[in-house]
Image 1 (tube, rainbow, N blue to C red):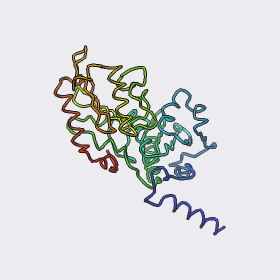
Image 2: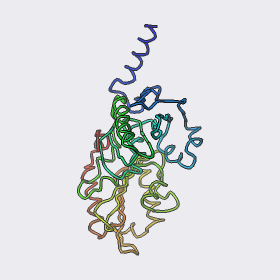
Image 3: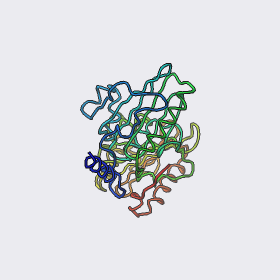
Image 4: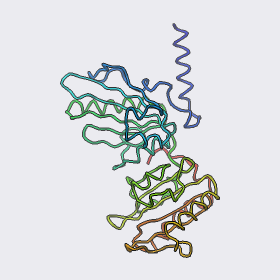
Length: 313
């Protein structure tokens, strides 16, 4: 018995040692991140577990979001206490911290770091991400007791996840002045670009699993500009996407740095190596060109910047 426990302890130590790739971090059993009981809330039924092949059985109609971010598995646990709302926890293993951030960013409305590497809370709900995990905890309708316990449970899960992970490297290229930080969206599928700023029905920017993309808003109110960054696998892929975008979206961009469209706003697009930079909805020509220039300054010709690690945003 002691030998078995020692082997298990050694295994847990090995999988949580620093220095490995984000893909290799994490626990072999997601249940190890969850307490058996919390403030009198108990587990009364077996946890539900889903993989890429079975996720539609759990969240049919919403599985596409997680699958497009590299989803591996999820554990669903319900805690029950008499005269209190059930507390439902989902821990999604997204394979990498960058993917976990991406899922979290998809519906981010505030920038908080109360739990994990980024979190947001509302009545009866806590969402956060840490390392390769995206966590959702719900208890409706909220009571004073469930509110406190929900926070305590989030803290326990946060503490059980041994390590943080790197953010998407493209975040290093976002100019900070005027940035609406809660607006940042990270994705690998063109459908999520269209859900935040519609470009075209077709994937005219060639966004797929081999690309990293960011969308962020700058400015305030209706005068907000949208900055889009897409990192392609190589220069050739970036230029191919640029040519396709210009031809199908705004041919005038082949001759001008910035073009005014029918609604009076300005659009600009440029390629720097394997990076495509586009600005939409800019209130003025100079503003669109300036924003692209600020990105290029941060890029500075040093590709290593795309691999610098940050812990929080």
